[in-house]
Image 1 (cartoon, rainbow, N blue to C red):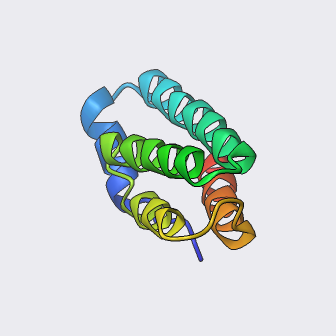
Image 2 (cartoon, rainbow, N blue to C red; image 1 turned 30 degrees about the vertical axis):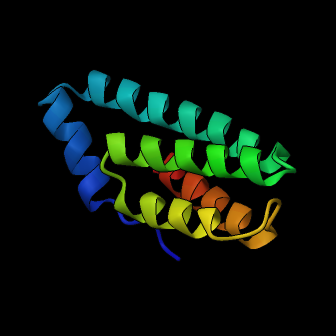
Length: 100
């Protein structure tokens, strides 16, 4: 599952214009927020907390137009709390996006 840069990077570029410093700040903000939301998902043990954490991930993805992350969040919503496959897929997305 490779990171798909298209829409997310286009959204960042549209928001920041030609300002590479601002693009870097927006990327960092996205990574930090995704890291936090993924941590909440990992710690969720009941259906309610899992659903809320997955929905927050989906909201973050939607706000940055990260289509692949929206799909992964939808998949997490449909799984049981603590599903290691869902968590691993989102972690992989995060790692690949953060790497550049």
